[in-house]
Image (tube, rainbow, N blue to C red; front, side):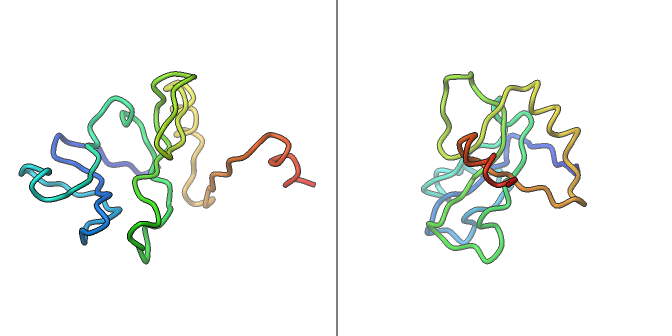
Length: 118
């Protein structure tokens, strides 16, 4: 997988009123003065992460932003719309992912996922 390392100045913008909405932006100023809502990207949960390709082309403000596959904070900890796995599983996934094969992420109950293969 091609990758990009974060810096202390990297943010994902989820301010629906910003032209930067649902984009990775590097900014060295005070982000609170530029955006109403953002996520700092250099955090432990994003040590290894994959951007889910949702609402990143023809971006529609309010449709959803900052959706990632990343490291969980624990097996019983939720996210705010992302998918999170252990660091061990994240590393396995990163080694397996091949962008040339156009991977997709599907989430649902086990019975629903099993029904897709019938």
